[in-house]
Length: 208
Image (tube, rainbow, N blue to C red; front, side, top):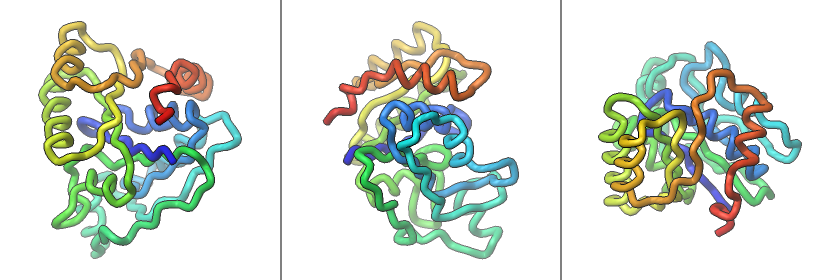
């Protein structure tokens, strides 16, 4: 099974949009283990509304919190602690599973575990979503340096949005990792956009 953990260089870089594209492209199942900030809906609902194929299954979250804060804070507000062993990966016959993380790599899950460590529990490859903003080179390369130095399997990076030529070059050259997709700047996200971008994904990159 191809399991991919979608993380980002920060919050708001487009993990959910990219997760929808990959779910559509691979006709994968989708799972968001931890959802914070449910007052305006969940990422599962968003991805489900953007995916056209009838194969994908959208699995329920293991933890859901109303407050739009980091998981450890959201759990503390409810006088709870997220247990690292409190997750059961969904049972599925699907060849592919997209697992969307919460925030960036080193957002605390609890007082001794980062969100990225879920990828070890779930035995997934990591796909890092990068977006162009002031400081994104530093955030991208620091994130990749952490992953590689700690022996996380990184499938590659996805560039989401318009990148200055020099910024793109710095991230790609220094990371020395495959660019799995480059998504243009998109102002209105809908099913048609996701379906189109999914059709541009090189599925051979996910064949192994």
